[in-house]
Image (cartoon, rainbow, N blue to C red):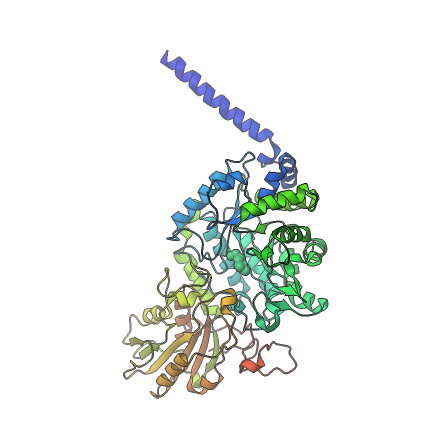
Length: 603
Ligand code: GLC
């Protein structure tokens, strides 16, 4: 009797599994054997207007409340902006959070997974223990584009491992004015360098198959002309004719689109006084029409609120301009209701909604999210791996530029040498990572795994008859043979980094003076997101290196100091003599920088 009972139970389970599977395979959009376009069309026609608008809605986790709103509003995307995310930032916490979001999405009628987006702009730097690469200004100085591609590939792996599948990177700004607080997010002032690295970085993140478990959706940003605003004012106005706009700023987008980038983020900035978020000509006619961009266009953070008019007017304007997904990211209920009414009142045509939703669904199918929406935990052990850190250390060495080397003081020998290290940036992981690291504005101190520049120097001299001492202000120098002063900027991001004075701080200048008056060689290493005005201190400096914002592998800088790696970095930005010269860019008529674009010494 018991055998018969068990047989009946197993038969019922087997039947329901087959039934479920066949019904699933019978539904085209759920069956991966169908082409993406077929799946998109099949799913679109099953969707209600509410479900379509839900897909166009992107919400930041710090405003998502309750989590079940993912199901209720059929949300298309969730993000963690600069300061959102699990408190301990550990991989397992990210995995749990993102997998929970996907489970909520799978409770919707059509079970459409969410797209989880993050600013992993120099490695997956929001995750504690992940490798943090040099910011783009350093990547732009590397003469080996393969390294840049590897940095992007590693970033994609360390994202996929925790369930993140959309990287708001690369920033492909062509930066014309170093007073801009986002200079370090740009590869260069030079369009040709930005073009090459745009394609390289997109390919590194997306690979040749988005459905692979170690590739993610890239996002070229910020469209268009974000790096060309007057006086480098963040979210300001780029004033130029269309020919210049295309030549300087659109060219990298052509490369990115041709490299297959599947998302573009619109810029907060304006072109000749018109906000980019309302520029239908540039978004729809040029990007989607002329360039043939088939991916999705996303707004920047609550950018619609910077337009004139009511919330209704703002939403109507950006959607009709060609926006496909709106990074609301806070008042998502209001957005949802407002857009629903705009469509019902025929102020936004359903054809525009369908175009947007098709672009979103196409990407979700290409990413393989319907087959597996969850974190690729099989890659978890690669987060912060020795192999990844080795590549990042090569990126640090490759991005470091040697600007002065009087009497060839560098490279230093490792034996029988007394080195005094000074400066606030010598032993501070937070400072060397800069903004967009565990937090929006960046942090101070020993914030994650990695090596500071001081760690690297100590490591290099570990088994020798040498001695390393440290003091913040070089007051502790006692019979040292040489002093290495590591100084520069402290972290910032976006408009908080806009600056009218790029000179060294008085404290930093005082440390150089203090070291110089000891009568020993002074080696200065700059940790900075942009060129610093250092003209008046230059005579007190025997050797000058700029390591930009190198990230967690500070030992890459000591590799250069001791000659374990030769300096090959070349400036991707012009280095001004003084503030009056700014903006100064290669190709300007009157071009007399302290160090020119493309400059860099070697051993
Ligand atoms: C920010 C930035 C953008 C970033 C987005 C999400 O305001 O402008 O680069 O991707 O918000 O964090």
